[in-house]
Length: 279
Image (cartoon, rainbow, N blue to C red; front, side, top):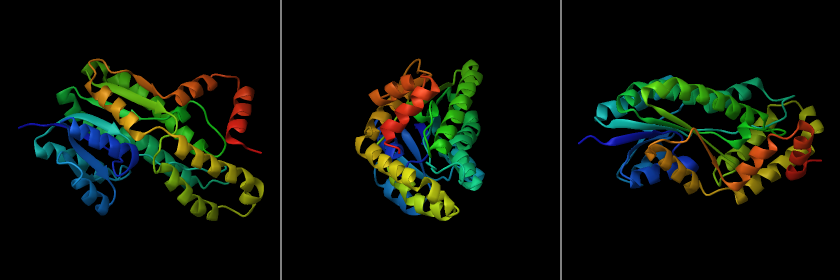
């Protein structure tokens, strides 16, 4: 029997894991992308409809193999959920260019690579592409410029992709929201020490106090963020809707930030400094 299948990237924890579980419980066969073998083993027992695949979205062979696995299974690919993402932070004056490139490789380029690989099967099923964006793509803040820029560029690419695929009946949606209770914040803080070590000593001399304020802000974001299941429910709605929205703006904070993003730069900057408690 042919099953309706969805590929979900970045499925080991947080939003991706919540999406995978919800889709599996709603009769989708989920090809859940993870980077580590122990995550593959853990997800394999979460639900009988979850089929974990080793998938580093920055490795072309992994990307191709994830789609080929679905084709060889005989399942019908009806959806691609681009969820995998990382957050690189730091002062742009001293940020290693390699860190900036990595930010874009994962958050911006990989979703397009996944779409390119999946589209032959999605065209057959007139399937859906759902991509996890961020309200940060509409406005930036000190030290999170790389993340905001990667999501802004992603939003532009998804806008173009949506228009290009409309004639084939393939719907493309972008989800935008503020913070979510997800390990991305913990991972970002864990990477901070390594990033700081790669910068010259004057980086902390100039920006140390502000960096501490940003770390404190990420802890607040982690405590006050949305439940990942809220995002998962929106993904399910986008996959099932007769006419899915082009963009889903999720949560009160995201709606407020969308308005703030339209303010004059001087007023917006002042609000950002106040909210982030920057010196």
